[in-house]
Image 1 (tube, helix red, strand yellow):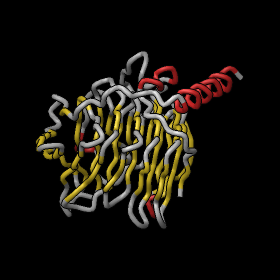
Image 2 (cartoon, helix red, strand yellow):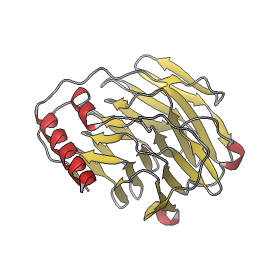
Image 3 (cartoon, rainbow, N blue to C red):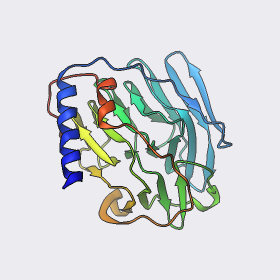
Image 4 (cartoon, rainbow, N blue to C red):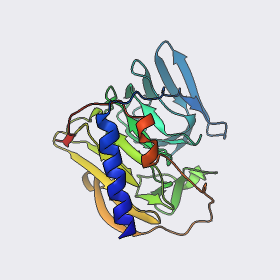
Length: 268
């Protein structure tokens, strides 16, 4: 009962803050994490070209210290025809505030972005990716017996194949969408977090839109048949990892990140 009341109060606060048209804090830039993943950021005008990374099979992994965009900025993930999936994690401890364009070029890869501290997609946020897109506050993304960890080291040799699960080892941050996010024909669009609020538009023509709120110590397993999320909640697999005592964007933080508006969101 207490948890239900807390979530209700959080949603009421979100609704109240949203309609106050509060000015957001400035989005942070995109910077690579100094953790050996090899992500390279080439800043050209208003575009951040994201190159390098670590490849495992047909997967390419990136690690960022910060990942955010102002309305006139572009995050351009560079791929190639041999890459099926590009996955990125954000390790700096801040929510990712996206007010610009996330795009992927030179390939047809799916794009998975993981930041346990939360995601805010502002009214100017948009996507231009040829494959499916996922934003998550999970603490791990599963690959069979291996995991792409949001914190600490990764054994990339175990991260081939397609993602099989989103794992939440603890309570994480919110995902808030005010933008018009769309993927291409037949693709999937996923917002998977501890709590998810969308007052914008989510579109996946002929594909799938999935919004999932996952409690701590749970996981969602993926079905790769048609890239559809199999909404099966079960206990998170055991891990020896350590996590911060408090992770992510909380309901009381939302007024600092909202861009305002008065439309009720919907998915197509």
